[in-house]
Structures are given as C-alpha cells and as structure tokens.
Amino acid sequence: MKTLNVQLGARSYPIYIGSGLLDRSDSIRPHIPGRQVLIVSNDTVAHWYRDRLEQALHGLEVDVALIPDGEAHKTLETCNGIFGALLERRFDRTCTLVALGGGVIGDIAGFAAACYQRGVHFVQVPTTLLAQVDSSVGGKTGVNHPLGKNMIGAFHQPLCVVADTDTLSTLPDRELKAGLAEVIKYGLIRDPEFFSWLEEHLDSLLARDNEALAFAIERSCRNKADVVAEDERERGVRALLNLGHTFGHAIEAGCGFGTWLHGEAVAAGTMMAADLSVRLGWLADAERHRAGQIFSRAGLPVHPPKDMSPDAFRRHMSVDKKARDGRLHLVLLRGIGEAVLSGDVPSSHLDATLRATIAAA
Ligand code: NAD
Ligand code: GLY
Image (cartoon, rainbow, N blue to C red; front, top):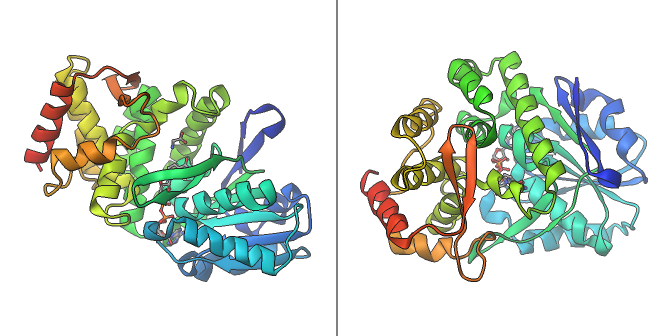
C-alpha cells in the first residue's frame, strides 16, 4: 500500500493506494470518528463491493443509500434523497458518509456531507480510474444544474481516500479510457516526464497491467495533492487542473449529461484548447500532435461532436466557474507540461478554433 498526504493543515488527510484495501479494516475504519455510517453508492458498484466495505466497517452502525447510476442523476434531487435517508435514520452530526463509487457518487455524497447539518464527515472510496486519480482528491463536491455542469457545490475535504486498485478489474473499458483522459491531463499541465512515461506505457495501462496502473494512479494523485495543497480554493494554480474542462463541460451539457463521459469530453476539450494555443502561437504544432496521438491511442475522442454549433459552445461556455466579469478564462498550453490560464483570448481566435475543430469532427 502506498500512502500520500494532502497537506492542508488541520484538514490534511491520507490517500491510500493499493491492492486489496477494501478488505483491510485498518485502512478506512480508523478514520471514522463516530458510530453512524451511511455508505452512498449505486446498484452497479454495490453489486461488486458493498459487502466487502460493510465487512471492513463491521461493528459500526452501517446503513446504505443507493442512488440511481449515471451523470444524469448528479442533481440536487438525488442529493435530497440522501438527506431524506439521513433524517429518516436519525443520523446526527457525528455521522460519516462513505462514497463508494466513481466521481458521480463521490461528488454527490461529498456535497451531501458538506450540507447535512452544516457539514458532517466523509470518506472517499473511489472505484473508477477517474475517481482514483482525480475526483476523490481535493474536496470539490457538487451537482449539476440543467444550465451548467457542477454549478452547485462546496469545498469539503474527505477524512481519507482509499483507492483499492483491484476495483478497476470490473470497470468497463470505456470508463477506463475516460479515466486515462484525466491521467494524461497531469502530464500535459505540469509533468512532462510523466507524459513521456505515459507515451511509453499506454498499452500496458490499456491492458490493465497492475504495476503500470498503480504507478499512474500514484503519480496522478501526487500531482493533484501538490496542487491542492498550494491552492485549495482555486484562487490560482488549481484552475490549471481544468485544462480542457471549459470546452468539455460545454460538450457534456450541450449533448445532455451522460451522453459523453466526462473524460471523453475532457479529451476533446483539451484538443480544442491545444488548437487555440497553436493559433495564439503559444504551442508548437508538433506538441499538439503528441497530445492528439496519446488521446487517440487511448481510444478517446480528439474532436468535438460535429452536431454542436459554435453558438451552442459559446452559450454553454459562458457558464463557467472561471469566468470573471463576463470574461472567459481558459486554460491553454505553452508546451507539454506547461499550462497557463488566460483571460484575454481574442474572440476571433476562439471563433476560429470552434469552427475549425467542429469542421474537423
Ligand atoms: P461515474 O461515477 O459515472 O462512474 C462511471 C460508471 O462506472 C458508472 O456507471 C458507475 O456505476 C460504474 N462503476 C464505478 N466503479 C465501477 C467498478 N469498479 N466496476 C464497474 N463499474 C463501476 O463516472 P466517473 O468517470 O468516475 O466520474 C465522472 C464524474 O466525476 C463527473 O461528474 C465529473 O464532473 C466528476 N469529477 C469531479 C472532480 C472533482 O474534483 N470533484 C474531478 C473530475 C471529475
Ligand atoms: N478536477 C479539478 C480540480 O479538482 O480542481
């Protein structure tokens, strides 16, 4: 088992990464302060892992709330169902919510924990690659609104993150690939050495080689933990973790939540950001090509949906948490491993990117 730490003073916490962690009562249990535990999951994940998690929490008062599976259910309504479950079972302020599942479960359960009785404990047990490398770390929680992705939320850090790499064995291929988009993201943003490693080992990751996956998860979490420790509330450098997300969130909302997977939208969105970076003269075409190659090899889309118009992009992109005073702020690339946030991209360049990348789809 590898242990990394997210250094946030009194809110610091460990990330445990390894095989067989779900069966170890010494990974999660010592972090749970009270007796009442609500596991939040869905049928898909609970089918595989609920019993083992309940076993690891043996001796505590454990209840389970199963919510519908899928991004389309990452809503306030679903969250309200969790509040109902907590109230019906008389859960008090000492309770802990344990998120067992992918990023959707983690984001909703974390948000419910942030809101219930003004904040209760929560633990992340991520079971998708995407959740193990990104969403379970850093304390961003929330739900979608029909008008915008992740628009309702809170920062609320977990007590610990327990990433059992064995759970990835049941993950569908499409979901594994979607998770690789966020792994590749770290290389592009701030870790060129990792990007080169990914170019070399991508086939092993796609073949689910345990050693390669464990390395990629650890390296990704290390990158994320460092950024979060520096800028927990996204006042600066943390925004760079959103490479490809302004375009990607527009794709997710524009196509209907759940049609494109988050990681798929991030891959296509990153290539749109790369196109814009090349137009601005910031990124060499050869580097854009390297980015496109690795996403393609991972089986991820490198173009936006062809039936989404530039107008639709603009409309959805205007609802972005990085926007300030009506101005878009986009994460762009100056090279592999060097992302920058820009608030003054000329509208003509953005238009050209939207038209060209949609036309190429
Ligand atoms: P997801 O949670 O929808 O999970 C993908 C699918 O895999 C679901 O059907 C799920 O039931 C299933 N699944 C999960 N674990 C499984 C397993 N081990 N075996 C078999 N099936 C399994 O999707 P995701 O990609 O994990 O997360 C995407 C979400 O994460 C998006 O809503 C995105 O906005 C959010 N996100 C949040 C952050 C953050 O910092 N909070 C960061 C990145 C992404
Ligand atoms: N996924 C972006 C962030 O956590 O900041």
